[in-house]
Length: 145
Figure 1 (cartoon, rainbow, N blue to C red):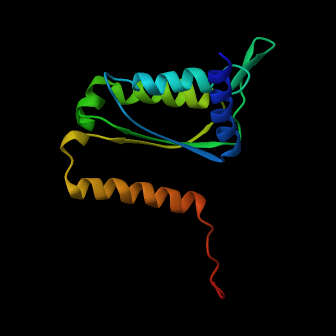
Figure 2 (cartoon, rainbow, N blue to C red):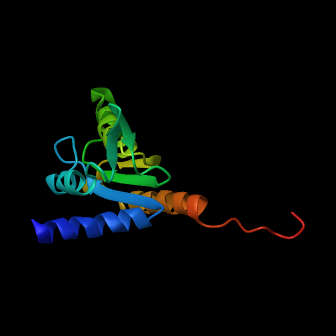
């Protein structure tokens, strides 16, 4: 228990230090992979990521932002028709990240990832790059403007 506990404390210290957390993982069987779920279960623990005060749940990671990048095999159209797009957002964005107080900046769903073309992959990279540049790079002030 001691070594594992120290390891998870170290992971929590990284989260405590960070201003923004980025999670990148595939969607398997309509959810996050078991290793990601295990990470959340162990690291986003009671007393670190959330608590209850007077019977009311409190997210303890307030002031931190998060970005999620998911890949999956189905098309956006298929996921939308099944309602899976909303279900995935509800279970992870609301049920995990917001529950712990994180501010959800963006949740990317990259569909048909198993057959993505180089152009599609470049478009995904561009979208991520643009988001990070707009969120985290200082805006240059040009004299006279």
